[in-house]
Image (tube, rainbow, N blue to C red; front, side, top):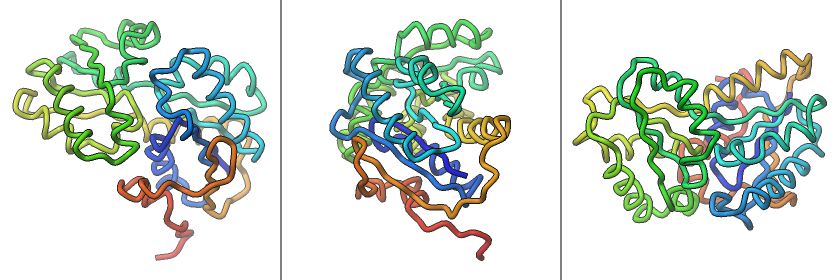
Length: 263
């Protein structure tokens, strides 16, 4: 089995790590665009072009599925990616986990990039899945870029700013950018003084990984067992995993050699 993932930068490591847990044998192809990162401030047309370039580079390795491991790219480029690559290659987008976060009907905040916040796509998800919950969109400018650099000072500043815009009594926070999934405890600590005491955080990586495996099975693909290999593409060129990835547990898990049945 071979699975490709794309993102502007290291945000794809969250879903890649979830896939490592579910299928250690899966060969992973990570296709990113460090020269163009971050994608959020770019025009939708430019973002689509860059996402398509990453997807085409990954598709050359003949994966069994392609995961768009980026919320912003899923908002602006998923339709174009599916139009070009499906049905030959299943394409799985990343959707903010609004439905489970809102299930209890308590206040929800969605932390996302400025490009995703307020988008018709996200507003549609809130309308369709927000239910009785009061849902607040919280833009987090600079946070994904700070995570990409592992800049602790910038991360703390961006998290504090977003926490200040998160309404008191919030019971659930949706992590609407894959980069934010590396920061669960820091986000929880920042909002704790005003949030509900049983605050929950909702990422997308586990659900996206499970959906990718379902789509592969439904398409009758992925029968062959892989070796747990890792291929890294930067702007379509074979590269190595960024050193900054080792700053996060997800990066260390993805980089580690697969333990196929070994104890």
